[in-house]
Image 1 (tube, chains in turn orange, purple):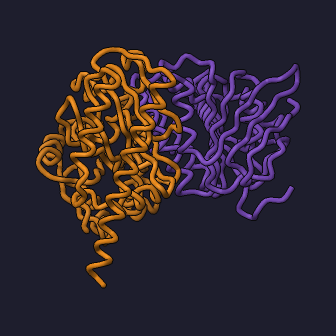
Image 2 (tube, chains in turn red, purple):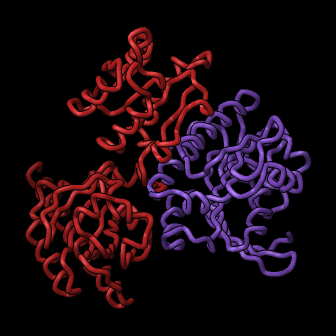
Image 3 (cartoon, one colour):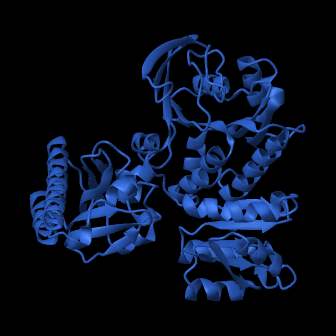
Amino acid sequence: MTRTVLCVDDEKRISTVSAAIDAEENLSAIEATSVDDALETISETTIVGVVTSYNLPDGSGMDVIEAVREEIPQTPVVLFTDVSPAEIDTGSFEELLVEYLNRDLPDAEDRLGFIMNDVIDHSAQVGFLTPDDEDERLESLEQYDIEELPIEESFQRITDLITAQFDIAVAFVGLIEKDEENFLACTGADWDSLTREDTMCTHSMLQEDVMVVEDIANDKRFNKNEQLENLGIVSYAGANMTNSDGHVIGQVCALDHEAKTYTAEEKHQLEQFADTVMEILELRQSLRDARGLEVSQ
Amino acid sequence: MSINSDGFGVSELPIDGVENGCSILLTGEDTDTLKSVFARLVAADDDERSIVLATNAGGSSIQRSLNDARTSAGSRASILTAEGPGRGDNVSSIDDVGDLTQVGMQFSTLVATSQQSTARFRSGIFLCSTIASEVEDTRSMFRFLNSNFLTELRRGDGIGVVAIDRSADIGTNVDSMISGMETSFKARIDVEKTGFNEAKLEISGLSGSDSTVDISL
């Protein structure tokens, strides 16, 4: 599948950049020659990567990067420039983060295509860490035919039970995929999916035990997260859905609009809910696999 | 000491060697002890270079620690420091460690420059907990680790060490953050000062076996 990469540079140099991107078999360049032009493309076109120059006719590459981080935050950006880092004004853009590629390097154009593919393949600029076995985990997640399994009602009953058990506002079952968390069932809210770096579950899944955040206002990992604020989340507890391959594929979570503590017993209960959800998912998949086998015979 | 040909030897620590591409999370509550163990892991051998981001130590202080760990290792290091002046060819300074956009660009430039003289490198951040306390949004720190530190390890011929002071006030539950980060790193070493000149290391993920060892500082 071809990956569309937005290339931003002035009229004189844009063709060199887009040619370097187009030279890669699986990349396709789309050009913009100003900040305004780039912002329009970002809002209208699906792109998987951005390469921008620093000096642009109506602003700087940092304006483009800022727009990317706001609109499509997980999309990687390469700043391709002959301006040295010390000369780049980052004062107003302290936490944008970007891959810097010095355009003066003799093989800079050859490296640009390689780097763009690398940062896309490895989600290299996302604001969360992934498990060391992320590739295997995603592969393991693919074995479930989620859309085809009759799991929604069972999971909905469990999230209903969780809200009643802990006297909380929201409970959900979510699968953590490469770029987002998809909610399979949710009580107390109507959520379909969230960008992965906006979720608390992407942190919780990295921990062996139930992760509890009693009040996100006091936790810098989450208290600047507008998505969480918009959803009204104040407290969080998340337990891992660990499948029979040993991979954490999702979370079962309890949320409230107020600060909340969880006892060791309550954390254990949440783990039991998560184990039950995982068991149902695996049994349903086994049944489907067995039926498929019968039909093929 | 036996290590495979691609591995990185570690002086003054009871570790057989660190595999190429390995990321190590180094944690502890005593900054001086952490610094000593950090230097032993990051000090470059003759055919290597060290690239260190020093958030709360000056360039010459890091160079001295590296020299203590391995003869002349300080001269084989490129240091980006947020403390003190950028003196000498191999020490550059940054004004604000919270400006991760600038730090990231400077750091990756140092890695690229060092790779022009030798492909093998040891990168290190001392201390990542300072970054965590300086940034407004912890997601920026993770973005920094992904887009610089872990990317360089994936693409290049090196190892990396991220040191975290567990006693630092970082605006979040430090143990929860470490336990999350641990899953992303290949190895973890927890350092506990046990006496005037002694420390205990709890090592996991290195050389295929977990162990607890005592060392002299």
